[in-house]
Image 1: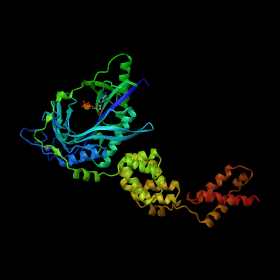
Image 2: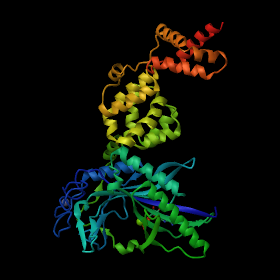
Image 3: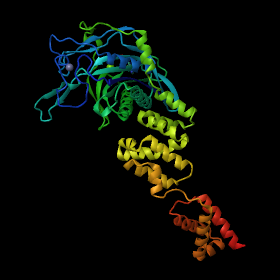
Image 4: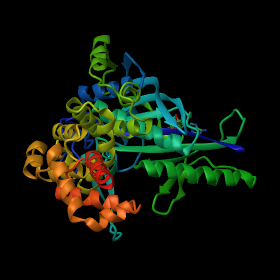
Length: 478
Ligand code: ADP
Ligand code: MG
Ligand code: ZN
């Protein structure tokens, strides 16, 4: 490939705090427009902000989970711009001293493991939402989101392909979910990414001119936007044209991007320290306590599943990428220790049910019951078909697998005498099949097995039936 793609992501995540960053208004998605607002988040003159400690804690937690260093002293700054989504005409953010810096996140893409540098994670406030009247009558503003605490995670330009960009975004989402820092409801906009991308001739050291695409809110959109933008830039360079540094808008339905505006310089924002807030001082004990509260992260969990539980890497990746699924798996394996079996059923049958009926299925079913069902199946007490049947019913009704198996008489029948008598009867009642078998038609054996299985209402043990039927037929041929 004569060109190399270079990508850096800026990821905005809304923090899971109860209240907004500088006032006591509820931090909640939805609600009547402008119902979660007060003079502070409406930017009324004369009001004063008070920094929400919980927001600082969440930001530090995210930083530690991404291997960052934490600034013991940082500050908030004003980023000035004039646009009605921000009623103060400035956004309170962090300029030159971010709360977290110099971290990394591990990714695995195209069979390679590498670390993507995290340049900084800073704390800031979200803006309100503008709703442009479709009838062209004007623009409406909802300030419920104004003042919602955000972190911005800025990566180094270490990403080298659209696939890597997607995987990094996925990994960061999992980390934020595992740590509880963000609810990651991408369709509600609580997690969104800006893509910065440039291309350069392979081997060239200096970076090419980049463009930026803002507010992508799905993994697929990030990957596709990168693919299309890389292609567009390479085509320009091939024609001897230049890439213009600009902000572009990605239209995911059309799979195209459009120029939006020339890229602003940080000078344009006239940053200066926020005079209404004191510096943020975090002591070592707080950092230590936050560190101790971080659970096992997806990357570590994945490695443990692969190395200790011998789950295939691909499967371990799917399970750990969603914390709810991973927790469900952990719970179920406390009941049934056949990890591979649990993981196989989880990835095929459970995920199928989740897809069909939504995440609520997991609550109805519970990991405990799922584990119990796996024990029955693992011990060979029920057939695969019965296990699937039980799973479907339990996910609807929440009934105990044990009592359901009893009630529907699904236990595999292995009583040697009983099965033998059924075999004998089937052989007697089907002389045509028996003579076919004798004359070498092997298909007839399958037919007879099917008859025996039917007599046992499908709950026979195929190995046992096969063994007894073979013996019976052999005795007839002697
Ligand atoms: P801003 O976009 O606010 O000006 P930065 O200059 O810090 O901020 O860069 C933002 C993002 O752009 C970072 O993720 C960084 O890795 C990425 N980036 C910077 N230069 C390039 C480049 N030439 N090509 C691709 N990405 C880049
Ligand atoms: Mg930017
Ligand atoms: Zn408020």
